Image 1 (cartoon, rainbow over the protein chains, first blue to last red):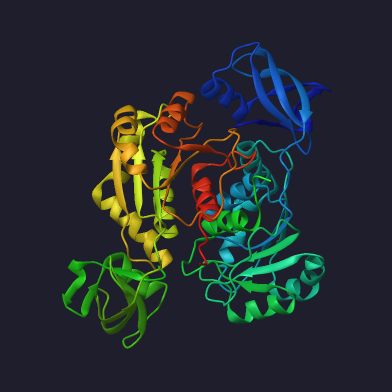
Image 2: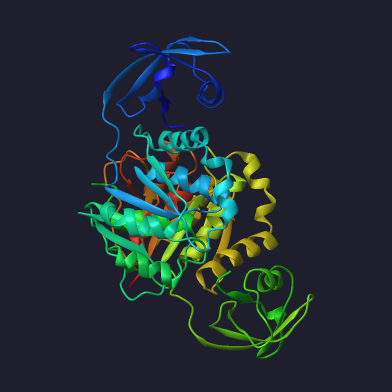
Length: 239
Length: 239
């Protein structure tokens, strides 16, 4: 937790918030703060800054916040991700939030097992909690949006073409001829398949919708590795 | 398992090998192979190719191998990694093997908890098993070397300078002034700190040994995300 992310319900006045639960435990056990200390905080979908701990007990921390700086810039990326298996999904979601992905579409694919959609990690609360962990890691505040589309064909035929408009649209597809471009730093849509990849039929449908198939070299990467590798290749984090 | 990695002890003649255990289970349950089928295989530290399943039971698979192609090129990278906490270590090790890192040094740092060094994941067998999983993911055969150095100061003072010779040497250090370079595609040494980062004293010692501090932008990344982001930035996987 490189920043404590504050939600509306944490605020008791405009500039005063109360922390409890996981974030309070972190203050006690990791940061080992005392009254008077400053901690890094941010307001969800707002600015980042510092919080002065004005009162600290085992049950709660009262902090007075001073938020003046913008969060790090978001990536100009819309990510379409074949629903990963639950354990990997949780990590990938956190990683996406940390990297600055703000628009995440979880889509179906032949190799997505039906059971993956039953995971409790897809509940509103768990989505928010895991994205919060990812944002706090990155000192970011802007909560990503997650969209769930459990049917492949209606999604790629009816919705996807409009979502790709005015974007460079790519599908990561090992074994294709074109290398993934570098440093687009422009509005981009990226489709990433499941373990085992999209089927040829699915790649064909994604291409019909406007995507270009690109590869990342001879190595096949797991989804949780492919996402940071692709993001790092497509965007310059240091700009 | 995008390739079954074969070890010397798997071979019964020059071109015939026997699979059992995890790899056999994968043939049955995931690949659902039958006698006569071809599966992708590689010989550890050797070539890749195909194996024809000539006999298949619940206890073993006999395959006749034909190895003719080289594995994907290795990264020209020496990675110095502050020992991660055990669960992350296992994933990072697999990821490094998948990405093509061949020279991994696990080093100490103030923020490495002593208990991290007690993990069973550091045993020879577990190192080999996890790197095998990473190599099989990438269809690679070249087993990385892992070196363990549990004392920071003697390592950076006595060993590190010679290891950095003829390499571009970097330490990933959030908050420093210089952005991480891109596309070196040359012999490179990279130091990655623990959760919470190297201490200023440690960064000073790494700089004395010849490392340049570089950053990856305003976001603080977890080690398991930082490694693929850095590798993707430093090297073009598609070359």
